[in-house]
Length: 79
Image (cartoon, rainbow, N blue to C red):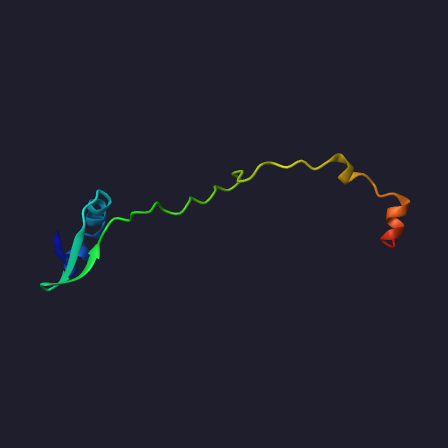
């Protein structure tokens, strides 16, 4: 199918639907084809996660991480 630049600008959404269904469209300036609108063969990039959606395995923080430091550990830190 060949369309003019004006048709492409006016009805782009309609032509994109046709391209998604497998149609190739030539876009012509006057009678000279200048571009081709074709469907993508590769899948789109993976979708971004939603806010709050888990993307990795959950991890566990051990209770010892919240325990007070010993006198020796405090001395090593200079506290």
